[in-house]
Length: 551
Image (cartoon, rainbow, N blue to C red; front, top):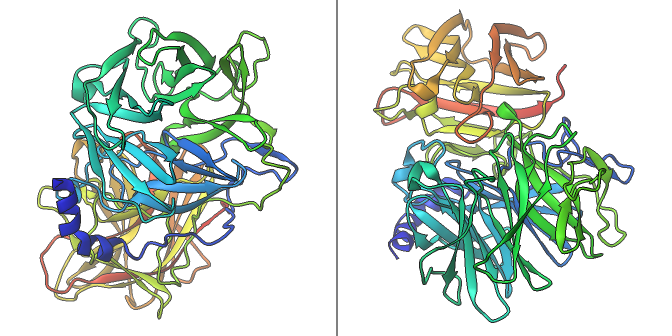
């Protein structure tokens, strides 16, 4: 009730701060840097070459929906839609502000939404998501594009993670989950508890159903299913970069559960293939969506064929017939009824011409309503500078950084910006940044005697270290636009450059190695900050933000 009360009390801020996010993306956006659909009836993995970690997915009729972890990023719980499991669009978010609201006004890296599950039951969409510091929440919607309900606490407790519900034939509702060792002091076990008939509240304590300490260390991310009289728990084990995918089965919901490894890296190049969702197409084909940890690029979503043999799933291609599949890199597209659907990808570039901000954008915390405004009359996105928190030591600790996921191994981002600082202030700063445990950015910064172009390196920012800022030059005409660019190449190597005419670009700084964030990949985006209080901040107008192949 307190969460609902807080949600209602902050409703005005929620609408003001997030109402400018489009709740549907432009139809059939097609990336210029990665498309999984090969146009010949086959696809290549990853189907989502971006950090949609811990994916879960369902089919409802002819439509597929996917959600993933979002941690501290807001809006959170992205909702993606597909007609064929290969081409995906981003249609909304289920979490527009993250409770507890005041807690997440700061950048709480690695906290917030961990592995969620999405289900459809009696005309409603359910998402159960864990916050490892507070407990397991539920949000619901009639329409997956939203609006979604305010989060309701289903099971309070520190360290409860990775929930997934199951509605049994007898009307009982169960929830499987794991534990975060960092919070609970226990890990590598799977437990089941019962919920009330509405699925909104836990009504008993958890029962241990599988202990992975001996052979399946770090088992987590369970997904609950029932088939042919068996209860199945699909769960990864062995660690994110190096593990394997398990299936557990039992005739009794509380076990004992039999165990089988149903997918592992094998001879493939796909490390740690695990944690995801089993879906069945309209034609009866079985498929499994899961992630691959690719360091600075994040956890990328793969699609693998799946078959049932002797009531055990086999995921991927089992060339040696041992019952454990290897992941595929290319494969025939799923049969979804003989139809072929247009190529589509989640949005990346944004021209900022409309009244809505693209759905790809997220803040590092619950936002203030004054951080950003669309300005369709000018065809630009306006970021007002905001004072950094008193205890922040660098940009990693500032909440007002507007970011999106890396979209491919190789890509280039260019943005056009005009800077209008408050002439009574110093040290207002705005520009283009790559964010992670270490970060780098290219920006304009105001001083008493004018505006300067600066390159900043935030090495080991996650450890609280101060950033190193170098002046490149002073702008002769601060009213002219500048163009900022960053090229990202294999291995997440980044080179920044700038231009005053949009044609000739000058590189600045050394090559920067992008780094992971807390439980996620590096991100790219925009920021506008200041270090002083004022009643009228300066601002930066971004004309466009374009993601293209490296030139």
